[in-house]
Length: 74
Image 1 (cartoon, one colour):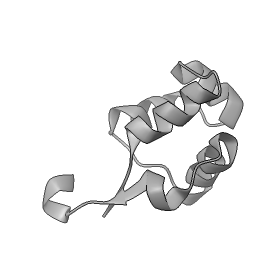
Image 2 (tube, rainbow, N blue to C red):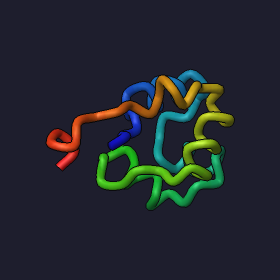
Image 3 (cartoon, one colour):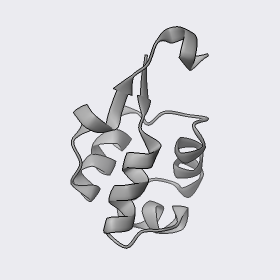
């Protein structure tokens, strides 16, 4: 299973001046409710949203989406 590395995303977002969920939402075009769920770890971005985040914040998905053992993901 794969999970978004939230601290890395937040670091990249803050480097672009986006320090709130609303700012991340506005810049990426991803619904604020989805951004909120991603940041809380309640949901994972689909490929389209993951690519939006990566392109917007100039991050590499290979370092931002991490493989986690299935037991740890439950």
